[in-house]
Image (cartoon, rainbow, N blue to C red; front, side, top):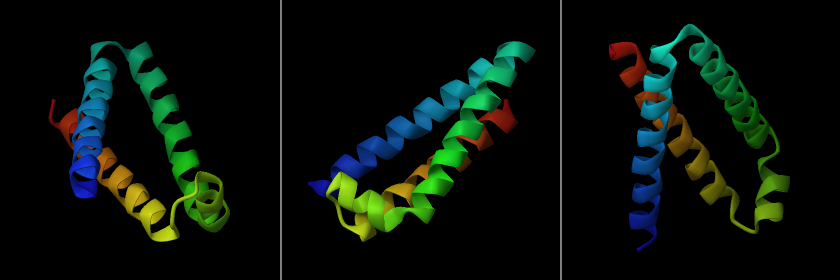
Length: 87
């Protein structure tokens, strides 16, 4: 059951990043906005890796689960950027 929820979040994340790539391809100002958003997400992702033990206590999940979510988030980003670059 847990794997099914993770797969659903993964697919939803891939769709979201693909949508951001499509929005970025519409206009140069939209591209700047999406790049700023992706930069903020990258900073939050990096801080989550650095603070994984304290963040896992705050979220009340195990460190392994948090790291799995972070790896899944990176995979979603790569798929979304692939869609953006291919359009």
